[in-house]
Image (cartoon, rainbow, N blue to C red; front, side):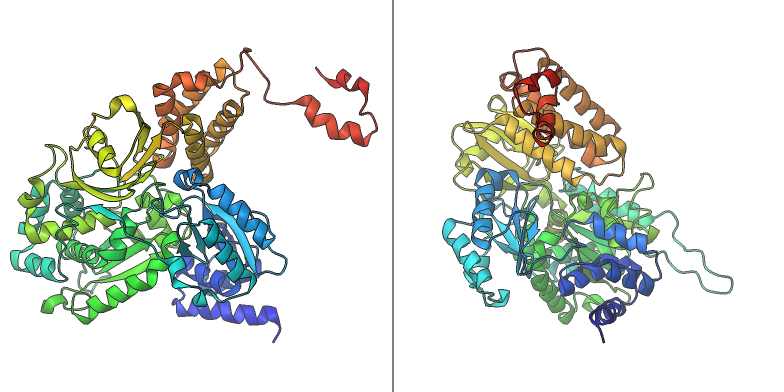
Length: 610
């Protein structure tokens, strides 16, 4: 059997192991890549034939996700985080040092096929950077000594399983716990109370708690769950002569924590996964779902095995599977599905598309996922922190949770704090806490400003530290990045703008083209070639992208520019040329090579200039 035939046999076996289910296409492709270090055109064709789908559909999925590649990657595939905090801690120097020691350049695979290296947007290790991934497994704090060790292990071809465990040690860094982190729920306790109290009572508890989605949008959790429970119609249409069947419902936990500066969900899944799964199961009981999914971002591959272990233990205890806690008809199970490096899949409808084995392109809404979600069925999508909180509320009551916070923002919020502070990590605060209190607690000195809510959020200046963390003032999904006065505001906005241009799914023109134009214009200004008119164009273009883009990514992509331009116009103006206009195209420079090749690189070169 030749090599290509053997590859086809293995790929076909992988598809068979996944039940020839087209919804599992991303999982299939991840496994193919793990086996062969890339997804070749031949493998794409084999997958398409085995699933009975068009090969263009398979190719489109491969090209959409950054962790999938059509070219062979190294046996050791290194991804260096280029999140703003990693960048400020020297991630570029880390990459340059590794490249020298390994004999490669960024974006390349070494000739012997042993190693490849590239940048990735964020690894979720912003509190312990600069960080990276090796074959998907996280290595925090890439100091010079650790870089030397990594290079030595790779050059010696030491199997990853034999690497020192301390290289992969990821800390939780929980700095401040309040009523959620300080009062964990024992497995089964919330479920037992939900079964004892009944569905309507539990809906009432969730509603009285005032719990709103903790992913940033802040939609009322009780309303979302009830909309899913009620559904578009209670009975599904069945063929004549067959009994009516209830519409299937699904519960999805969004663990695609891709916002740079956010890592709280990583910590919850590391240390409180049981409680997250408990919250999902309570939700399933209330809405009538039989199947749940935890969509885990590809950068958290190293958590996958641990999460599967927690799920297996819950099944053993009767907390998942058929007849949960002995209640006949209460059947529910959870499957972990891995993403593959696409920030846009944090948007709930894009996540559902990815779960269905497609490119993660956001859907047109309405209809909304609560009535037409996974496979067109009613689906609850909440993030990790929301389910974590829901489990505690189910056990301890809505009033217990709502007794802290503000009138419109009940309970507590988990923050991922990083950047220029001496105590980065996870902090839990009641809503209504001031920014100045948070800065004091995390050890931030001489602070220039704070990016709240990640790149899609807002940059506030040192004149706004009296503002409060709350949906009615400063809403956030959890990212809190501190910048001191040594930092360049324009470079911060530049990093975020490059991030959005890279992560745009390309579906709509305003975002696909607009984010690139914003990036190019900001680069022009940052490189010292900007004129006064460029600032007006930057503002105009930013507002246009915000108001016309299809989904939240495009609608927030200009926020870093618009919020910093509003607060620090003088810093932008200092970077401008004193002339009114400078063309972005250097004709003389563009013709320099042609002149040398034609032997006309002489004193008459100026005649080509206009």
